[in-house]
Amino acid sequence: MSYGSGAMSNSMLEILNNDVIFVIGSNPSVAQPIAANYIKQAKLKGAKLIVSDPRTIDLADMADVHLANYSGTNGAIIQGMLSHIILNELYDEKFIQERCDIEGTEFLSVGWDELKKQAADPANSVEAMAKIAGVSADDLKKAAEMYAKGPKSSIIWGMGTAQHANAVEVVQHIANLVAICGMIGKESTGANPLRGQNNVQGSCDTACLSLFYPGYKFVADYPLKKGEGYDPDKDPDADHFEKVWGVRPPYGQGLALTHMCMNQKELDEQVCALTGNKGTYLTTPLTDKGMKVIYCIGSNPAHAAADTISVKKHLAELDFMVVQDIFMTETAELADVVLPAYAIHEKWGTYSNTERRVHLARPALVAPGEAKSDMEIMIELMKRLGYEQKVTDHTDQHSTSKEILAEIGDAMAQYAGLTHENIEEQNGIHWPTGGVDGLAKNPGGTRFLHAAGFPRGKGVLRGFGFTPADELPCDEYPIILTTGRTLYHWHAMQMTDKSSNILATESEGFVEINDKNAAQWGVVDGDYVKITGRRDVAVAKVVVTPDIKENVIFSPFHFHDVYINNLTNPKLDPIGAEPELKVATVRVEKSSADARPRVGKYKDGQIV
Image 1 (cartoon, rainbow, N blue to C red):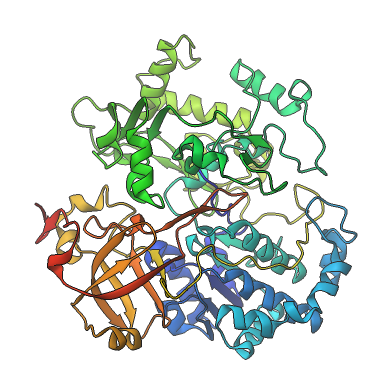
Image 2: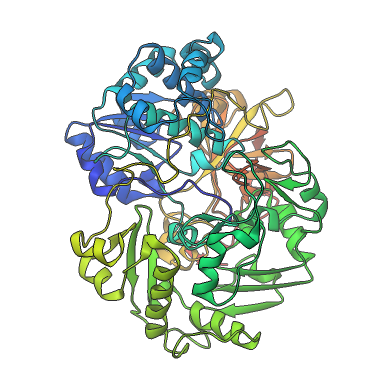
């Protein structure tokens, strides 16, 4: 699992009472319609809306300010706002003094005085940043003033912010913006990333991230406290988890999914974000880390990863691969063993959504054939490997899911006290729970975070600095390709392509092109263009629109006839290990349907 955007600090319902909503790198009407509905309701109630997106998405049509920036320049947008807010003293001095690292003593922090000095540098001015982003400086100033004055402002972002090689840098600048304006730890404010898939949040919470034990306890030697070394024998977190699990957890950082899909040569070229050393991920050497065996559960990197041609090649060269899923995917087709698992409506369990609300899943259908629940498969596998489990009866998924939830509560304080019964009674509970005592006082859990302070202590203030996208327009590849989703399909269409109604509505890939570019290339709606990138070629049907920035094209990554992720950039964020899916440079020329290198699987709503 690579690193997403974190957890929403505030709940969805609080959006209704926002005074200002700033949406950047997200199209929630398509990717998170429930969140979009709350945003639209807040706008109808009088909230001001800022949208930063190279496309005129439907929220941009409603916005008070639309910043149509180039893909890959989210950091310039945020830093331009920071500079303007600081120079015009629109910040919350009281909050900064009480909650932020003033002296610059915290790891990666420059401190407040230094941040103010940097804001005065002409290179960091709102005008300089607006030029980089390709937006109006006046609009950027207006957005900055609107957000800072609030009084209740929320910033909302998504994969359009996270899937860049500078994603962590941008999110740290977002944290600066939230902190200096005091828009955190209060109702209807906050830093609110929208997660990409169901239970991504719960997976991250419970340690499906390679740097963490459950509850975001750091493993190994990641130098968060001024870079001092780490002694696994003296790690209190490891002691805690040994008591819960009965075995001492392994020492050392794991690999992100993106690293698992690389061969050793590619791993050797990775550069440590903290030291600049090659062949290192943060502080872990990548030597001899090339994967030989992969066990893949509910993921389809052969379609959804960046530069999928290279990913497929690596997966095909593995010594052994197991895929556990509900349908045959492109990844499953490469596997040595495929284990059929239950779908969500066939099983008991819990999942955590984007607002940290833990929900209960109940079976509504009987699973077909020889499928088993993920829990039963994993427990049976561990037993056969010689590690007996403490569950009463792993074939009874209802009782097993209750026992697993109790163990999660023992392992991580954020989930302590959760049961099937109280989750059902409250229709979901926001973590952190505060344990049994906390739930007795507040049965619904914690709606917004950081009211009393930050878990790490003082808030870090990152210094100014803009890292451009890895690929920039040039003579050979002058156009920016960005990718995303449509309303009708989910991810790599593993499930939505089973619906004839959905396929009758949308079964063919497409590319959105600005009307000026369309005239330049001699194409109209329904024509086809050839998109040539550094890694592959795609041919897609044209949708001409004024609602996308000139010299930027957009294509959704769902479709099997286009396979746009063959063209996307695998360059990783050096800390988050997320690839630059949202920015690749290409050239575009008129083509025809007959020139398509691959055809779709569907016609008239049916699989061909």
